[in-house]
Length: 378
Image 1 (cartoon, one colour):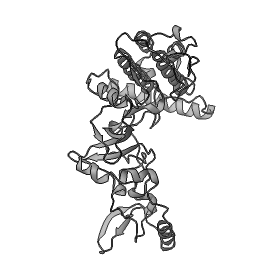
Image 2: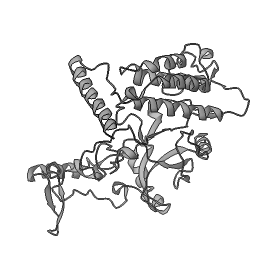
Image 3: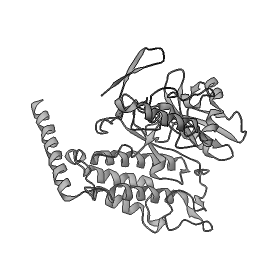
Image 4: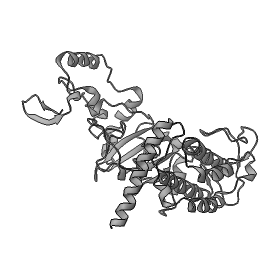
């Protein structure tokens, strides 16, 4: 039940959930924890605090926690720090969320070393506006004001591709279509990603959260007070983007694609070696196929349409793996076998208990019947 919050002046502010307001004894406990520094910035956050004023001058504002003048908002109140937005610690030290001041758009700012290809490849890809390009856009690159070896890359804010969970067969079909198309775009421009993994595929999920969400505590509202639930992906525009080109290579036209190095998150491709050259494009294909196999084929029922594709992509002999353009043609054939009814079917986990599966499938059948009834009535 919401509890009215009275501030120091006696004015009643917006109603707060009961769990966000503490009793006297608990408030004293949290006050002690705060005094002991439990909620202080951690070392990796200090990096961003030191750049707060600079970023503001460049048109970006960080959350209040990173202001040089920050004082905990719950200090001297009965507010529960857990549900105060400025208590939330940054998870990824490399990337921070910010707001673009001129339009309040949520962005992500990544620190990276200037001595690699990441910046040039990311900016090159960002220059292409075709829908087939599924690489993260780059708004601008800022010089770091303190460390001359670093730069700051400003990008759209994106969510992990698997958060929230995929819910229907159609969600998987759309993901495979976009990620294959995106990899084909990279390879046509002579770029090997070299770190294709579920962690490096993000999504623009704005359509799933019309009222937004907190950029770090993603299942909560922007003010961190209430849990939020996403809308279904089905029927909404969700775009998937490749990120992190720190290991990527752009080859010259006609150059050999052979490289060395056991790099990337997925190290299951048999040819990976620190001494024996291998084809970087074939590694990308293996890694994406392995992602399809592990994230979908192994986890869910009704993934028969993926078996052949993933199998081709993960063949042990790299020379036997098709090119990504050949795989696109194969996928067009497989996708055509997934009818509209199957696309709407829920993703049933293979680990789901039998009784639970029967119940959930019964509900799914009922919703499918309602869908057809609505079409008939129209």
